[in-house]
Length: 301
Image (spheres, rainbow, N blue to C red):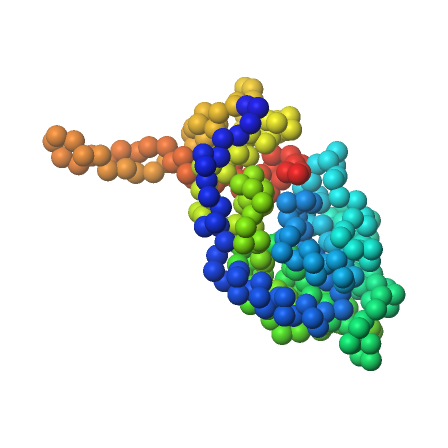
């Protein structure tokens, strides 16, 4: 396929109500922040334009997550890419130095070199951790606490978007320098630029699957893999060749993985229970294999 048909989908319903409240709270918290740490798993589509203005006037550290699952041939964001001159980039999994070791020294250097406005007299650093849902903000904070304070986790983490639903109190992550991080809810822009950007975010778990639909997500994933000539799914599922339609792929996955469901069929002689292939379950299996890196290293942007 040369292009993907989104069927006139409206992405307005993909923005949960709690995100609007979270966005207001984050804008208020930005006034007290010395630096921003942005966690991102999609290099370009993973940015929230609603925070660009704030990013442009404060030091900004970009932490790229899940780099071990990204295609090494496609790297549209390099270190130092960002809206402001005080921006730095940090890659996560492929970096020879663990990201937790880089963040605190980098933040301290940026804060020391830049103006602090009304916070010039304070010796402590207030850092706001931002990003779209399910990108690993809470995990980063907990990693920093374990490394610098030898403390356990201070904020809940989970594999689904929406675990953090409000701006939390400050969490200390370092003693020297005295540094506090504020975990924030994952927030999507109220108006996504286009459906394709929303679909990329959904594939990476930033939007709950059921809001978008596992069937359309699986179809778009297959389209993207074929477009980038990423045919790891052929070998992973034991297919004879790449396929351009999602139905044969899901049928094969359902058959080989035993994804079936019992369906009641009404007949002239009564109700009959039949076993049928569970296509939604097969679509979810396809998405889960992609997110786990079992279909190869892929960069959506």
